[in-house]
Image (tube, rainbow, N blue to C red; front, side, top):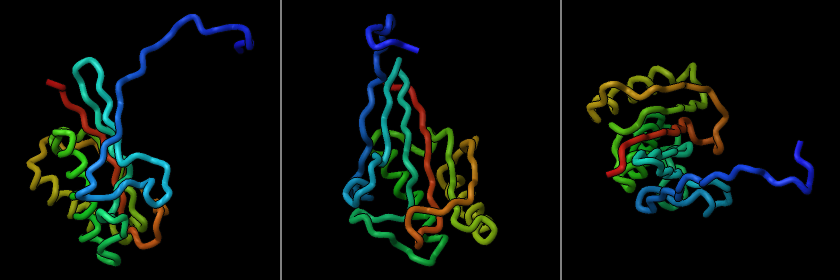
Length: 156
């Protein structure tokens, strides 16, 4: 426990970071009252890490799209993540991890896995990113899937 008059003896240098956005694909979350960035770019020692927040089937105006259509929501989610990666000079080949949240994993997992496999093959990924599938209550009742991603690449 540190007393008020004590000061830390070591200091640290924060890692350079900035928000990731692509307003052509989806709006900023804070535009509709949510306190998070669509993603963060971290740069350190020649390596860049992109942390993409949970992303869903949201359009550039912050509206949920493809309501009731799981496959279309999944594709829009992948397209939104792609747009966030592209604005930072990255692709799905740089993605090392995803976390996938399904509103109803029993009902939708087969469609999810089929769509994810198709998308990852389209992207020519080998190996696929590490991934976790989780059933979760999502932020909007009409959303059926949300995905977060982490990408890493060497900075030139």
